[in-house]
Image (cartoon, rainbow, N blue to C red; front, side, top):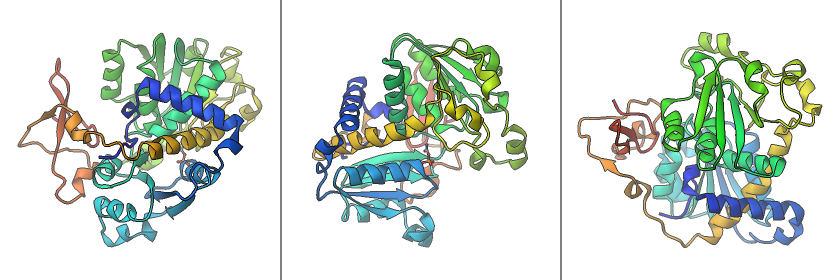
Length: 362
Ligand code: CP
């Protein structure tokens, strides 16, 4: 399998530090990088809507002197005729040097990485994870706070379906002196498997539904949109969609140097009036994302001949003959002959998860 970025944990803390260093240099000396990808092609395979991720990958490749091909709507690809993810990426491997893929099915980029002969970048898979947004978030925190250790980080809103939240929490769990404050209604609490990651890394966290009370402690406030597209029950979405609206009044409870992040798109959860507040960093995040995606493309193309162990071989796989992943959004439901694979993630509680979507197996 080629070196790819499927999950933020595919990269060590040191590798992320190095990416941040390169992204900083790119932001200061863009001309130095203008021809680094001359003759190279990035394919953007977006089976789900996107503004920032797709366009920033495309801008990143153009600014590196490379070319871009791809589609932004599954209806315009042969997937609409029933083509599998495996076949699609085998075909695109003949046209491009690297692929950025967004897919509504969880685990689709992992299947792509197993089948493609070129590196795959997970640009978001269902409600599962979004590692390149995490790189942008870490880079922004580093630029604004000067460190990734010793921070109190609050996550507010849809912590259940927000894939950027899951990836960033898992990433932060590897740093020291991190405290996490989880702010959500009961219905949108962080999944147990992400909380367990905090516990295993001995990261202290609290859960609350009160944003105002939590604000005064935070160095970073990560706001999120309630993800309407992931709800099975639209009435429940309507009830919860405006559960938190950050505005100037609420920000009076925050410190002068608390930074506000949001992966965007924003709906109602941050008042537009806050955009001029010096603490609002969500549009800086967008520019930072382009620079760190440039650094990522350079890294993966430089390592294109490095073969890594297949992801499944890296996990402690369990044989659970009678079991099937119950997640209707898991790629194992649609990809022919993929089969089921389960990994043992927690020996203490004997917890197994689907390798592809990480749904707990009951
Ligand atoms: N942050 C983010 O993933 O935005 P898009 O959905 O517009 O790509």
